[in-house]
Amino acid sequence: MAIDAFRGTTPLFLPERFFVGRLEGWAVLESLVGGLLKRATITGHGELDADTDTVLFTEVYTFDDGHSDTLHWTIRKGEEGKYTGLENRLEGEAIGEQGGCAFHWKYTRDTPQGGGRSFKLNFDNWFYGIDERACIVRGRAGRAGIPFATAHVTYRKL
Image 1 (cartoon, one colour):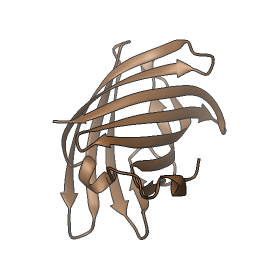
Image 2 (cartoon, rainbow, N blue to C red):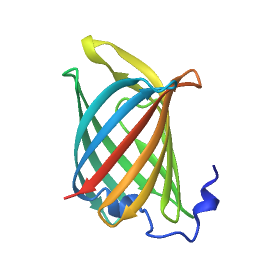
Image 3 (cartoon, rainbow, N blue to C red):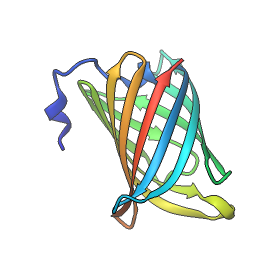
């Protein structure tokens, strides 16, 4: 998909608006053939530094196997719908594009797993704004550019 296909759609999904304040969410991860891999609950909180158009967003995933993963994002708005992001376990930067109701976010991250292990995973996530308080994410995770899992995530602003 191309982000340009979403230009003109509403409501606008703007990370600098949606990720500010408190959020809750839920996720399911499926294998590419459709088997359930994991479930998670999500809590999040973000603050906007309006002077720099930067969002400081923390989200905590708590998985059904008992392990958790906390992400501390710094998301910067650039020009013409472009975004960059930093997080302490990223390889390089996250790169994002916004258009209408959609936000496309890609990055590679050393991701903690159950049992104390971690894997470097590539993420390719599409956020779709539903209304001012909800979005749905369809994401793919893989290794070495080969996808092996799909995530379905729902966020709700509190």
